[in-house]
Image: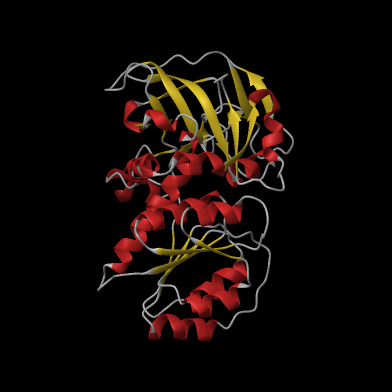
Length: 349
């Protein structure tokens, strides 16, 4: 079979490879890969910044935003089922969180991840997966099901926001999502599905992003954040850019008893001057909360699958702005001017 592989932490090692077909272990599903989403983590691994190969190997099969079709069924799955594979696995000697099924909150860091950390990913024409780590999708999501994994990230974020809010009376009305990439727009989608007044902030004025936000019923802004925040006073901010200055602006710009959920990972090495005392005063005197959220567990995968099944299919298709075949996979790692989500197709359909 063909597969997209890389030598982790070696720049320029990405290639369209030929590997033996996988043999499913007893009880595993054999899956035909249909498509693979590409995200910032994949690009970091391809640049040699991150990632770990399976033990005893140099190369890692890349890819964690999966979509496939069951060939050999098992564990309640049928031939032809549309499935996505879960990314993370708990560590062999699990911490308390992993033992409770909350492996996205692993305390000791000994988890593994498909296509990222010590387990081959889903970027191949064939792959296997344990039934307990496979999620069945609505058949109508065949063109867009690779969006499930990024949707799990925001499904978890919204769950965490809800749990924090319910420490007391909680009836939020307005949410600001900063960043109109895939995570930001999917966060906006779930906010609209919750019946909130959703606003999306991004600096771009052209391309597909403004229209995608507005098609959801959200309001799109491109003014500076210091102008937008005072006008909105959002109850919730979902921060999806990782831009350090914007993160601190968001902390100080919510309504009283506001929640800021950080989903964007900031680069290191840049120094910012901030009024730490002023931010502390705002957080304490207004009972504000700032939390980070990353990864997802099985509960979030199922919540995300439900959210995508309820979403407008045409809108989801528009979120995928570029599709490239496996033989041209390197093109998916090059930024395009109007990219939102770029997808690698692994089979002819």
